[in-house]
Length: 417
Ligand code: HEC
Ligand code: HEC
Ligand code: HEC
Image 1 (spheres, helix red, strand yellow):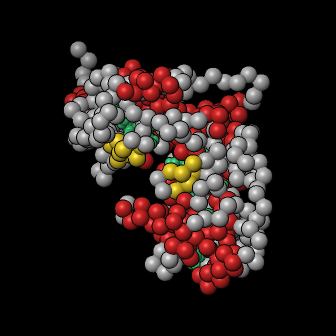
Image 2 (cartoon, protein in one colour; image 1 turned 120 degrees about the vertical axis):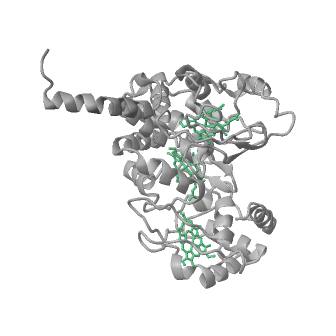
């Protein structure tokens, strides 16, 4: 019988408290692998899970409506709440949802969850995200999962859709490419799901992979061409330009607004430098898609260009300057600007109508905003100033009609923007 040392007595006293503490930690002790959890936290940031699964109480409690071609689909609760979240899900259930688009009860998920991209995620990464999500506080929030109209309300319809458009399978590194390129491919084509916005979809919402990154209209914006084209794409950007844009939301060419400002704020600005470079290297290696060369610019002395110029001088030139050059690292240059010459003018029109608040990142916490002109300029005036922008200072793109502005104005009003 050895006498109890003070240290042992202290240990005996603390033991019950320690057990209590352990009990307070999330279930499944084998998931409490700190390294996997931290990796999972990072990967959830790269996958931008919280931008869709956001809820006022928690980044993962769900409820936000995601616009899809056939209606709005609510993002579910993915906190570990057993009744309304993923509390009863196993790792296998979780991997099946991300990689195959099938929920725990066997029901098909809609591609509003970007599983056509997430299918490339490795099992290891899926498990790490799962382990991290087990550690977030459980929130009870029952989300309405059945918001689509008939026949899309029948989830089995997705079986047909998957047969037509879904290519399941983990990412396979391309032999002969560097590790950096392959890492970039994994991030862009998989977890980062960049193509979910930047790759055009067909009438049924399937991605047109032959047009990867060629750009499309999206949620009242235009996700631009980010392929290698020098005309509409980022063919003239260097790797550093891409990295700077993704890290800070701005570079010498442009500033991120709208949905991309959110992507930058929540996801890319929090990625490692190595991952941003990998993304840039992979993107810069993409072929040019869309028209290779610009159409001839409208003649500067045509009536619409003259009217557009007058409106520009009155309303825009104080900030963007008469020569469209803007102010270095404050006001973006509109000269040789890819946003100005995209196939769809949605972003341009809405920036003029509603203004824009750019991404705030740690690197650039208080970027200047662009004022709204919708109250001041009528549809024809907006169409003219946008047409002028699209055909000045090295830009060239088809003119924009007042009827397009009218439609856009109505859509923005309906969304309360
Ligand atoms: C672009 C928006 C979006 C992003 C990004 C997104 N999700 Fe989702 N997610 C959804 C939507 C919408 C659904 C519901 C789909 C449905 O009901 O068919 C969903 C469903 C799920 C489900 C199935 C839950 C269930 O109860 O069936 C899981 C698990 C999930 N998401 C996890 C994630 C994780 C992990 C990430 C990040 C790696 C992520 N999601 C990123 C929108 C998104
Ligand atoms: C939710 C939709 C969405 C996702 C996801 C998304 N983007 Fe974007 N992206 C946009 C929109 C919209 C714009 C236009 C922003 C603007 O006009 O300011 C944009 C702009 C860009 C631009 C600037 C192009 C130019 O010519 O100005 C780059 C580069 C870019 N995105 C890269 C990426 C990468 C890399 C990813 C994946 C990590 C990604 N995007 C994911 C919607 C998205
Ligand atoms: C008070 C200063 C100011 C005025 C006046 C102004 N802008 Fe802007 N503009 C900005 C700022 C700041 C941004 C960057 C904000 C952002 O992209 O979210 C911007 C962005 C833009 C962009 C996007 C460029 C890019 O590459 O991201 C376009 C296009 C644009 N403005 C057009 C116009 C037009 C057309 C007018 C006149 C009708 C106008 N601006 C008036 C400050 C101004």
